[in-house]
Length: 217
Image (tube, rainbow, N blue to C red; front, top):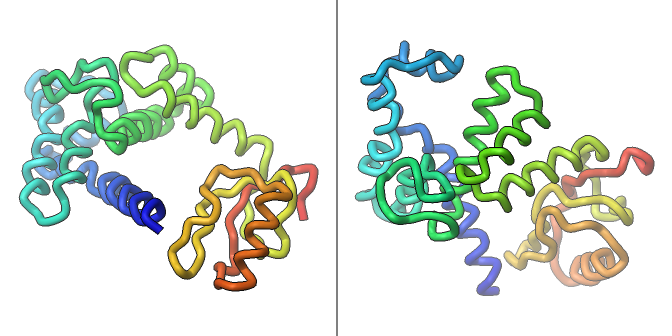
């Protein structure tokens, strides 16, 4: 029971940090935000102001109960994996909060996509800037998009699960036990475990999966 609780706590922290990642932008004028969105060059003062937003977000959240770890994620969201970037300290690599490393990849990818860069070109740009990003996270993002090219996302019932499908979300029993993590591939062992557990504890009826195009149901 302990591991699922820790897992759910970390998920909550990362998802909340993602929702609040741009809270520090409240100090940035709309005209500057528009320039950032369209990739326009910022003036020196505008760039300095923009670089402050993670610190502003940190200051806004760090004194709120239970938000300290979320504030740390937001604080380091613009920090590069090699230790460059902001804030100017010695924290780098895996010492950076996992949520901050995830946000750095996701936000930069979203920025590239908004500017019209294709998925694969965006991934390649990020791979070529290895010092900026956690390479494990970039590789996982690449894998996710490659999976989407070969699979169709769909919600199905537990009884419709088949070999080769990949879970888009965790399967968690009603009592809070994490049965199978997202990204796991359905095989005979997984199916046996799920059906065995379903006899004694309720599992939600709708399950989100990636289905291989050749075995669409």
